[in-house]
Length: 485
Image (cartoon, rainbow, N blue to C red; front, side, top):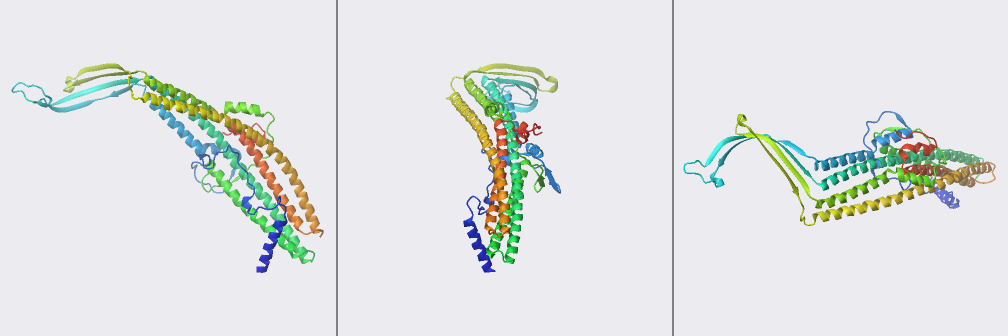
């Protein structure tokens, strides 16, 4: 038994050395080529790959289409939930700013029982006059109106309004990113399923080759090395299949996390996104124009610049006078049946003369933030331009790769058939068949990877243009379907 294992190991080493580098199997099936997400896809550590709980897992297997995955992602994805809460926070801050410019009205009813030592306050009292007065009651019911208005507060309120608009646009941008992430993960599951199908076919072929080698050895028509070589190839293909099956489960788990499926929910995807050329009306120039018009993050960046400009003017307004108005009216008396009306009205202005550099510091801080916002907007414009161009480059490259990979797959299948026929006829040993199998496996992987890359590039283009939410189905299928609900 030990000698057999040593022979198998030696055969594997010899086979690996004899195979061309272009068709050698990966040392670890898990290190085989994996689809790479576009650079514009959010980081795996971001909230776009998380979700909130959406209920309990249902028994049985759940069917999940791409449209259902998108709808769930847009409802339960963590980034959108956080974005909605950010908008709520901005609205609360706007209310705070509004409270600085609106009047306040208060009612202050009170009853006081007190005793006063007049001598303690220095009152000169005639001889025989008691120095302590009381105890006595004071009833007072009063309404007070006050208002402080400044140009600084008004402009600060306007800046808060702009911040809300920017937050709402950021949520819209997050929707586009969620759509891209969900599509990306769904495509990865499709690619993993395709790899399992391809790998299972390779295992079946390797099993046939192994049985054929055993039969030929038993018939005295082939040496034992052919059996060992076929056994090594079979086990390598089985190992790769096991790795692909584990990879599929992990990618399904990542998809479930992003769209808020309950933990432990079993599901299967029901769609296979085919190869569909991008509609002819999409051009680079048109896409760039549309991106700057539709991208929510770019519009949010412009709104933030406007908000920063208002903040600068608000800080400068700190040098202007502010107005104050106060009024109150009420009734006061020692007993409820002896109340009498009283009132007071006052108006004034606060004119800053010296503030120890407070206004100057506020202005410089606001101007610095404005410069940052402008720089971020300009950088984003450049990134959008590069993102659209990258997507078109990837589309052209991946589209050509799909065509070449499909052609090469047909040739690899013919190569396997001819090699098997030659081995069955005794013209050659099964090394030629193993090499043909490895070439076929590589061709299958190239088809899967190139198709994934092509569809991913279309999803990236939809994101780069800013219309993922409405037109993603058209990008992937070439049809005018409705966007996510």
